[in-house]
Image (cartoon, rainbow, N blue to C red):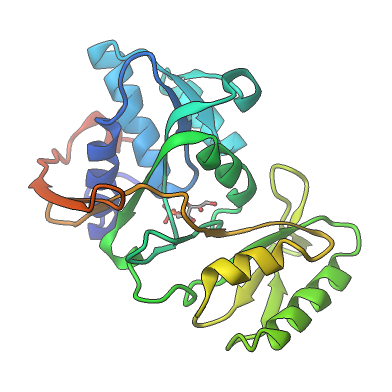
Length: 260
Ligand SMILES: O=C(CO)[C@H](O)[C@H](O)COP(=O)(O)O
């Protein structure tokens, strides 16, 4: 992509740029996956180059690791970091409690482990990701390849027993083949429409044999930074109960927009 940014990219960019300011020298920072998180990584790379920011990043996917190295961020593994000061990541949906659906980009397992190992998790998102009730976005569930059709049937049975609205669990494909995560697993996308009790569903899904993790993030996210295409950014902190709003300038010929 080159030239004019789409309104959605402008919104993602300003959210990412604002959240990149949360990173301080010396921190260990979890780096999310997806298009919004990619803006974050580029913004952090710019701070490394231009301000001499020195921090270590723990990527949540091979894609993010490649981009982080490319823009000059020092990359370490979670094994090396153990605990993190902060994780900044995108989301597919968030609600008023900052419960999330994640995993549209297929990295939910590493994203959940990294976010849970962090003192703070900040979600960056365009305003369209905010929902009253989670579930319009298909809920990703990571399953091991062994016996995945059995796991799929068990997941569907569980949805019926819980009286969840939609009940189909489809295997995510990559062309003709099943999608394979960085951990070598597959993903079932649950088409639910509406998730009445996300906390309960998250717990029940993880008890099914073959399920490794689900994309519901409950009580993990502390703040959301919401970007708008006109440059406005709203930051909500669920622990402090605060909301702040500001406007960021974005320069369309910024180097970050080249070759995207
Ligand atoms: O959970 C994710 C990847 O597994 C992403 O954060 C989520 O899919 C949002 O992606 P994008 O920023 O491209 O809209």
